[in-house]
Image (cartoon, rainbow, N blue to C red; front, side, top):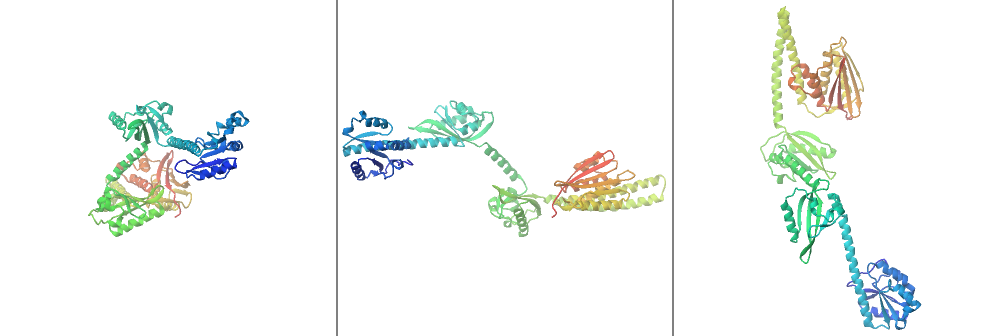
Length: 601
């Protein structure tokens, strides 16, 4: 049958299956007159839903297979069948019908009742059989529940073990095997001490045991040891199974929180770092409201963390600066690309002053854009020192250059008016003055490079290289300079790239001792990089100059114009996001520069 009714408060469904029409009519009338019974519908036996079947011998002969199938479908619940037999058929076991009765009795018929039937006896027999059915249905429900519970425990992602009151493990689920490395066969019969790590003191286990043996539940994190020797942390709950007020067993549920603990530690470490920074750090929603702020921002704003959260910059700084910041946030949200900018806000609730160089990034939650993350570096002192250095540089360069021009001029006058040793001395004065003037010019160029914006912009390297090569050839017409490669090649570069190339080309010609100075410049594109090769046929460069070009090193030894010029080359390439490699050949030097290629925009 497709389903069985549930015994209980509802009326029992009785199926009268009698071939004797008179008995069938009388039985139906009797059942209908009792509220505790409902007569089954007229569907065939295999399609009926009922709690008990009353059948006579002729009907059983006709429907024995269908009734047996119905009882089998109901198993393990009992679907009782009451067979009505007449007094004349009490000796049936000796007849052919009796052999049929013997065949079906064990599998089909649950009880016999002779006719004619007394109503009281029929009532008693029906109630007895229905009680047996109700008990079987209850047992089936409990069995199903136990089976589902076991399936749930077996499928649980949490490690589960059960032990007796002595601590001997009686059951573990597959998650326990996976978490601990111990198989069910190894764990059952052992005690939880197989997981003991040595990280927990004995008082921990004593308190645990005292708690659960007293009938209370224990929950605490514990560090266990895997079968392979590694340590792991679990959130463990141990509950007693209590019967008649006494624990009869213990069930433990463990959740591996090793990764969670490690993540919490990292988050705590990161939080400490963020809070200790003197630079403001913040996370804002796409609407600009603060979601996270550190102490530095609170200090500059003159407001508490609670006052800042859910507000924006307009709450505590001048509207002009707040509008600039809002515009930059919109750029990040619209492009999902980081931006960098400087602001010098005025704070409404504090008297602090600052210049911030801000890097703002898109911020995501669960893979979706949720706002922006900003790191505001306080460059107030740096800006002030930069201004001071500019003033000092201007004063020194002006005074030194003026005095050197005087020395250079007097030296030339002296050289023209004397001879012998004094002429040689005058020549030295002129040469040193010229060298110092060159050094002064290169120093000024370096100051300009280090002071310029570090934001690279698209630059046509093909055009720039040819322009620099043309100027170099005009200044030194004796040099053979050849440029090959694409005429257009856009790279990301700062404004100092041209000065760096001019210095590099000029050095290759000036320090070339060949009778026919030659300079070969080759430009090519390799993937996402532009590769510029500069080859000369000069005497090569020293290790000192090579170190300056490749790493910007030896800064403390840059005491001459050539060294400063190479340092200018290094910073011009470095600030454009490029790198330099120097290869010394038997006759000459090859310098390879790589720069990032950008689109035509």
